[in-house]
Every structure is written in structure tokens, then in C-alpha cells.
Amino acid sequence: MIVVGLTGSIGMGKSTSAAMLRRMGVPVHDSDAAVHRLLARGGAAVAPIDQAFPGVVKDGAVDRQALGRIVFADPARLRQLEAIVHPLVRRSSRAFLQRQRRRRVPIIVLDIPLLYEKGNERYCHQVIVVTAPPFLQRQRVMRRRGMTEEKFRGTLAQQTPDAEKRRRADWVVPTGLGRSFTWHRLAAVMQQVRSSIGAMRCPADRKRPHA
Ligand SMILES: CC(C)(COP(=O)(O)OP(=O)(O)OC[C@H]1O[C@@H](n2cnc3c(N)ncnc32)[C@H](O)[C@@H]1O)[C@@H](O)C(=O)NCCC(=O)NCCS
Ligand SMILES: Nc1ncnc2c1ncn2[C@@H]1O[C@H](COP(=O)(O)OP(=O)(O)OP(=O)(O)O)[C@@H](O)[C@H]1O
Image (cartoon, rainbow, N blue to C red):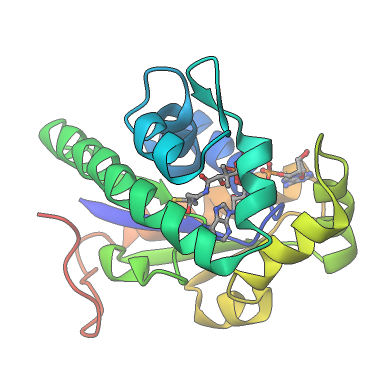
């Protein structure tokens, strides 16, 4: 089974591209969605977050905007949150990989915002980076409810710069040229990945994906 990583900085179009890939029939695991489930009522991260960040749990669920204001202004607090959430997200993506392997699916996609930041490329045979010009990224992100200039800057400061992501990618997919362009580029990438399945090996400097 070929594991394709999908990443990009905040607002670059990961979720939109992931939705397109699903429509093409490719199973996609979405790390942000897994985090949101863990932070929702009944989620496994609610109790430890309540302990570490008093006041951010309301009606049994984490108020993500309130937590975001805290952690994107303070890298040490963000590391503390990641230490709670990341092991649980890894559990979710491992279970997804096992399910898809049992189904004998040839290609799957892992949508991972922090793919380069946390060394997750070692789990992927190939990596797609989605990208758009900075002005468009800013416009998209600043439209979001609860977003502030400070939070946007704080988030960006925690991420590998877009230029470095593009340099390290196997495939770069623009999302600033319209949805149709992105769709066709993603379809072409998946076609190329599919046609090289027999020959594809994990690069020597990457570990094999989860067994
Ligand atoms: C801080 C939280 C509550 C904010 O939730 P919110 O719904 O407002 O944002 P959302 O989860 O949709 O994230 C939006 C984007 O923020 C960026 N982002 C999120 N977490 C991080 C992080 N730890 N480091 C850098 N960027 C991050 C990513 O670009 C992500 O796509 C949430 O992002 C969170 O719990 N983050 C810590 C867990 C994590 O590292 N998630 C990233 C994928 S595993
Ligand atoms: N290919 C595209 N063509 C046109 N607009 C796009 C495209 N991709 C994304 N967008 C727009 O950009 C916005 C952000 O996209 P999306 O939510 O997919 O980004 P993201 O990378 O998942 O963001 P985050 O890092 O916050 O999770 C969306 O409102 C969407 O309408």
C-alpha cells in the first residue's frame, strides 16, 4: 500500500484538496478532523486538556478558539498541548492504516498539517504540498471566525515556511488558480503515483510506513 502525505501551511488548501481526493475514491485520514473529535464532547483529550488548561472546557468540550488563543501565543504551551494530543492522533492514523491495509487499498492519503515539522514524512512514500501566494493565504485565514492577526502570525511562526515545504515536496499543487486547476493537478499526481506503484520504494532515508 502506497502512503501519500498531504500537507501545506495554514489556509493553503489541505482540507479542500483532501475532499477532492476522497471524491476521486482515495481514502484520506484527516489529522485536524481527528484532533477535533478528540477535543469534542466525549473525546479522549478533553480530561487531560481540562487539567492542563483550566477554563477552556465548556459543556464537556474544548473551546478550540479559546485554546488556540493561548497556545498560538506561547510555544511552550503549544508543546504541552501537542504532548497530550499527538499520541492520540497517531493512534487514530495507525488504526486507519490498518483498516485500509485489510481492505487491500492500493493508495491512501494522510492529511497531516505538521508533516515536516514533526518528521512525519518518514511514514510516507510520497508527499504532496499544497500552496498559494501569501496574500491569498492571509485573505483565506483572516476570513475565519475568531481569527486575529496575532493568532495568524503565531500559527505561522510554528510552521515550516511554505518555500521549504515546496522544496522538500515530491509534488507541489497550487490552490490559488481555481478549484478546477487543483482537481486536475491532483488527479494527474494520483495517476502518476498509481502507475509507479510496482517500482515505488520508501526512499532510503525514510522509514517504512506503519507496519
Ligand atoms: C489549537 C487548536 C485547538 C485550534 O483549533 P482550531 O479548530 O481553531 O484550528 P484547527 O485545529 O482547524 O487547525 C487549523 C490549522 O492550524 C495549524 N495548527 C494546528 N495545530 C498546530 C500546531 N501544533 N503547530 C502548528 N500549526 C498548527 C494547522 O495549519 C492547522 O491546519 C487545535 O489546532 C489543536 O488542538 N492543535 C494542537 C494539535 C495539533 O498539533 N494539531 C495539528 C495536526 S495533528
Ligand atoms: N484549490 C482551491 N481553489 C480555490 N479556493 C480554494 C482552494 N483550496 C482552498 N480554497 C479556499 O481556501 C480556504 C482554505 O482552504 P482549506 O480549509 O482547504 O485550507 P487548509 O489548508 O485545510 O486550512 P487549515 O490549515 O486551517 O486547516 C477555503 O475557504 C477554500 O474555499
